[in-house]
Length: 283
Image 1 (cartoon, rainbow, N blue to C red):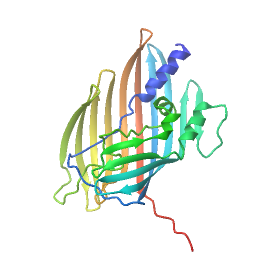
Image 2: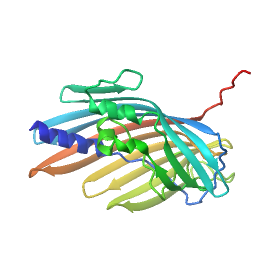
Image 3: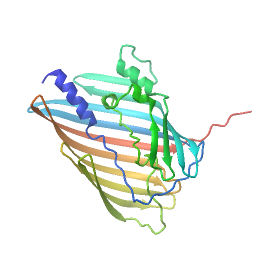
């Protein structure tokens, strides 16, 4: 298997299963954020996979840890402004007996364009505007000047998309109701880019403070099939998703130079969000 072809397939492998588990009750919950509110999001992604051609195979393993701050910069009766900044990151990919490792707390290799581009992403805020229901209205992401989707995938980073019309990933469109009971379930389905997704939801636990939602998603498409199991913990008062635990298994194929390659990948994602306490300064 030629190295050039293998590298192309590694990039494809990195994209497969870049799927975020989402849920909604279609209740259009209005959120209540104040200017100065700040949240810290810590995300850890571990992924393993294999590219196969007959009896030949190439394994690809990635691991990333990213710390982001999410600060409320504007609050009106119509919506909110947010500033999202990557504060720290640690990314590693292993394949073909090579290891690429980037740690934002260590000096950058001046000969590595990848490391320099990843470094550029630090402390470059994404400006995001949403309506009062958390639906994205507009976004501006300066990091895209140097760090594209291929680079993010190659570095093992789970990309976060802020598409107009989507629900901001900080929150869940879920409204607590005292009558909601453990065991309540519902099903949702949608089609995105010829990819059909069917999701089953289950209320695993509910208290006045938080709700635990489990979901199972099956996704079927022309090139990729995925299964997702996830658990979300939602803060009932704010609507913020306090914790996500997601596990995906994806399989797909690609034809390159008239040769068929099979690709499989498993990914685990653990994400926590906490509200940052303002630092008191002494007079």
